[in-house]
Image (cartoon, rainbow, N blue to C red; front, side, top):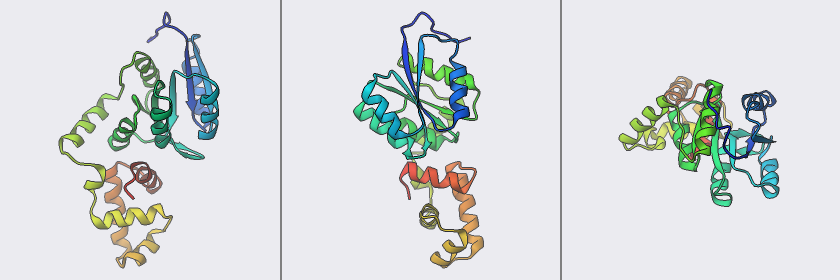
Length: 214
């Protein structure tokens, strides 16, 4: 079992609004008495804690009730540069991981991953090391080797469809707005999900907002 029991105490801030996941994180580090876990279910609560307490590591969910976790990562890197940040995401896509790293995160962990990956990420962050799943490292390297940003992978119409999705429009409404068939819109959505590695349209919207491409 990975452990750094002889290392100094650590204050770990968990910014996560799902209680079951928060409880799971506490259980994951229950044998690490030196790790004190602070919890915040909103970005506002996290800011309040950071103003009062020095934190060593922050685990930040990408999707929080009052804003984007990735945007909060950028704020942390500017206002609290000593805090080592781990992004915890419901998505396990190379695009999302790449954006997390570009935002300033030291590690990226999917909520669908083996819980021990989160332990490994925390211990790596404590050592000052970057941590990413091996399969995502390969996929991110492939994207970078092609010299392509996520937006460059999309056609003009796909970007238009994505913008309408972000505005909350239905596929029928998008078809009317863009003067194309409903089938064309569904095909574009399928293409967008494939290119941005999103499983559903709501995930597509979240990726678009985080990547600022719509």
